[in-house]
Length: 228
Image (cartoon, rainbow, N blue to C red; front, side, top):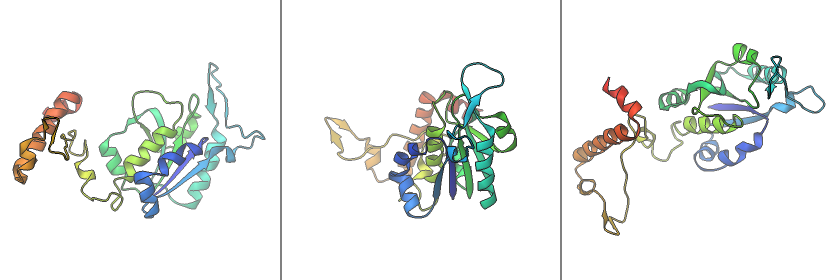
């Protein structure tokens, strides 16, 4: 998988992409990530990439020309499966979306800023808009990092245990069950006896029951869909 990210703050990705799972994926050459400085495509002598909105009002808008030039340059080099804009009004990121996105080969992620991007970019270049939650961030970089992480960890060979991602929350439309590790007894707080029984069938039943119970308590909107 190759991921090209367009941003005016490329340095924001140095931390998230230099550690843990994403770094492992890059080191194994399972993913190729390139972050492009949008200002490099500005024709303004001050490398400006924003301007006032024609409609007036507070806030600036990211200009069409630098974004179009950057995307068109990348598209000349390879075919992209998706050109994604991280936007508060995009479809809400969930596990099924992450699963499907992890199967793609080439992706562009455009990080917005200010009051957003010129609408013509959304109309003529962007193929998908994704939000990571019903709130507003100062820029799209954090959302792009979250989206990248959700996709990359699902690529075969990235995680040490190939089945680990399959047992994550939401993979079966349920949140994950409780997990425990040693010591067996800590301050009188015991690990559930069934988890020590060695009976795999009973353990799996217990995990499923706890997942259903926890989903009902903590994520009723998901549980209610299961009931229909």
